[in-house]
Image (cartoon, rainbow, N blue to C red; front, side, top):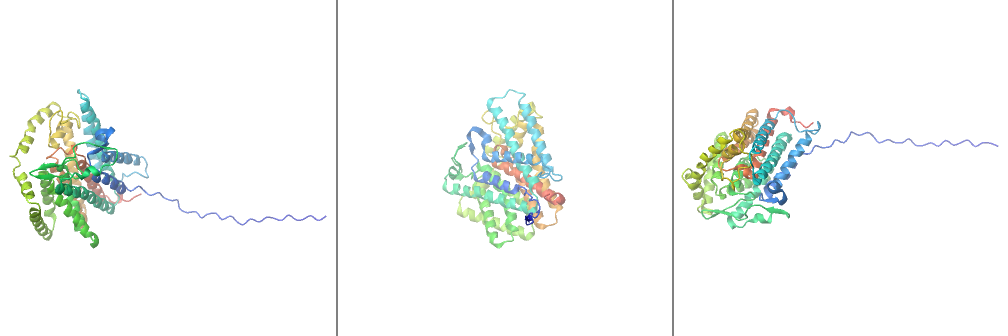
Length: 448
């Protein structure tokens, strides 16, 4: 009996998949996240909040706090950390936060009413959000292209309240009541202010003064984008945004806004070529004539507000605050009575952020405020000196102009009581820090 040989089963060689490089996860783009924040800040009316959270329930404030959480979580990983090289903005934010914390401790050494205690707690939340805005912007922007993208989106965002303000000015209709998301609670009045027979629009801000100063701070950034636009199809759109912002600015009927406009001109015009200066002066004069013809009385009213500074009741009331402020500061000179605790309902209205900071955070807090405001100007100017590119140098000067608007404007109203202008100025500080880093430390600006 012959045995049948066993047939060896031959298996085809197994093809192993080729090894490919590990898929690298992309970094989360801070500019994209900041774009979402800008939409919330400029499009959603600032007076609508999440009711149970009180003042801390402003949507823009909530997003800003999440920015800080994201920033701090990112620093825990060497791979994802946004910290690259030196960044003076971090020092500024730490000093500012320490001043607020010191005032919070000082506030708890004295008897506090329930309203004051709630306001002090709210102040800590607000400062956390402001820190998040500045730090994510200063450390997160990785290239000049991304900074330019953020600049464009800031201008586009500010164009929305400018457009809303023009509708309010001409119609007297408070259109922002139709922009609130369901579930939000209105904090404040929906009635438009009036002055000298004109409606004073607020856009999506909380007050006409706040709107006017925001538009003055953003105007130089809009001018930069229009002047250096290289794409013909976009040039008209960018100049349209310049016209929209510049036209809505005097409609706030606010002397702070007009003086902010003059600050922008004083900072920018000396750095422009003589040809640009001549055009700017001609356009400014022609625009004033057109606005005088289209809206009789508006230009005269605005100029009259400026001409009577120091002699009108509003000015004398503000200067009359000095004695009361000096007396209060002398009682708690170093750390003040507590950030955000000087409530108008309990004390008095102080239309000057420098005086308000002296009261609430003392001389230490006033120094931190001055450091915050001056650092934007200094960083932008240093970035301008470090660059040889004309476009970058102009962008730096425009950011310096925005910072100068805040330095001046904070002396005309209690800016920290208004969410939009405060968020915008911490955003400007972050942009100045990013521009400084990109120009002075290019080796630290490459994504790892």
